[in-house]
Image (cartoon, rainbow, N blue to C red; front, side, top):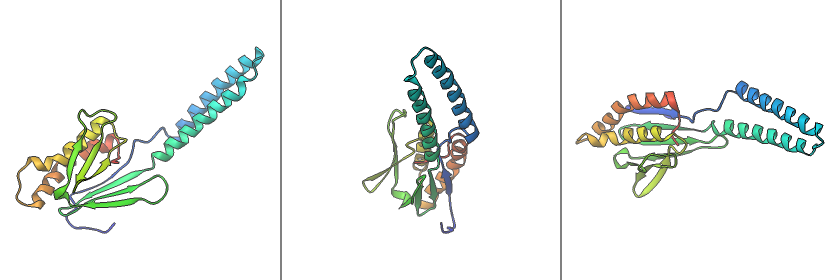
Length: 184
């Protein structure tokens, strides 16, 4: 990223990570011990065909933990200057993409009410960009407020609008960093 003067907002947002690797291994070990006890019980009763299914259960749980850990590697970098809103998306694997918008023409919209499936969308020139898909509803609502804040204050220049955004982001972004660091 090139260094720009007048950066009003520069945040790297990420999803909430799953458990730590040590915790995931501990959960898998606990489930493996529980499965072993169940397998021994059923094999003792002559129901040995249960064993492969219990092993498959453990393998699927391990796969789900791994997929969750990989998905938590995605991130977005949101950079706002007086003349540009830049969003750089980085998937867990592969190359990311970048989108630049004029902040003066961006409209922020959140489905009402803010529920689990609600969408936070940035609209510009008739095209929408969905962001914050994996955030909790309250976090998406805070992002919407952060984006709409400049419009609440009258201004005659783009710089003062962007400045209002910058003042608000300091509080909201700090809250987001503590809860979940992702905008998608």
